[in-house]
Image (cartoon, rainbow, N blue to C red; front, side, top):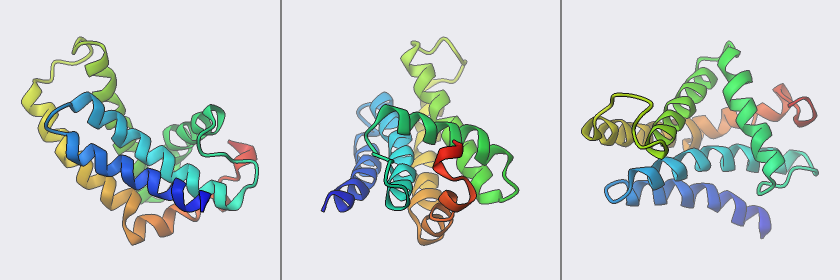
Length: 145
């Protein structure tokens, strides 16, 4: 039951991002990034007993996996996952700092966020995305993160 709940948390976060995108881009970008982390952490928790999806250390390790290891992986899908997470994080950080980090206007941010929602569904939650994410614990064991 607990594992099912955790899996649905990733999907719920993605759904929340989709529903609130019009009212609050900052909340949307947070939920979008968190849905990616939650989903990958969930996959690791099914393989590794010491991985608790909600633990800050686990989430930081998954961020490091996405930000570092996937960036240099030869698999193009993993590189796209890294690039997407990086771009979503950029929007989130820019908004959190009152737009001082980049010169993007609000219409561009909304357009990008809509694209990022679709890409997140495709890269992280599609059957192909799930298949590839399930390979990560073998390729990058948790204790090496």
